[in-house]
Amino acid sequence: AASETDTSVHLFWPIVSAVVSFAAYWLLLGWQFGLGFMALLLIHEMGHFVVIRAKGMPAGLPIFIPMLGAFVTMRRAPASVRDEAEIALAGPLAGTVGGVICLIAYPIGKELNLRIGDELAERRKGYAAA
Image (tube, rainbow, N blue to C red):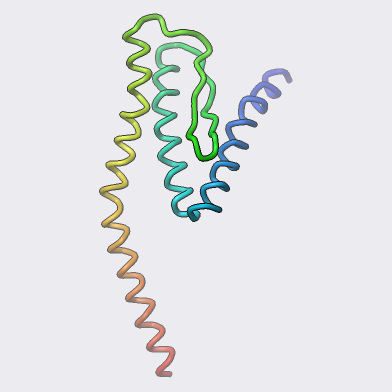
């Protein structure tokens, strides 16, 4: 029973902080920006998290801070300066990969959106003529 409680406690703040941050970005900048920005923040932070865990160190899930960013906690110091550097660089590397995927996906999505929009416009004309 204790491990179930620990899991729920460890998930509570990451989930609540993500929801609150998403809501703040949504209200101020729109849901599309909020979703995209939160996704890229999560990818960045999970880069740190994955490398911390791969090095056998305990780590907390990302905690989001509205309008500031997010962080992952390390439960102990890295064994070497190299480990610390790898952990530090993992976030920006993962974020760069996420950003490149966005750059590739944007024109594809834009073209798809235009095609769907054109198709819907044609259907509306057909309904108006009938």
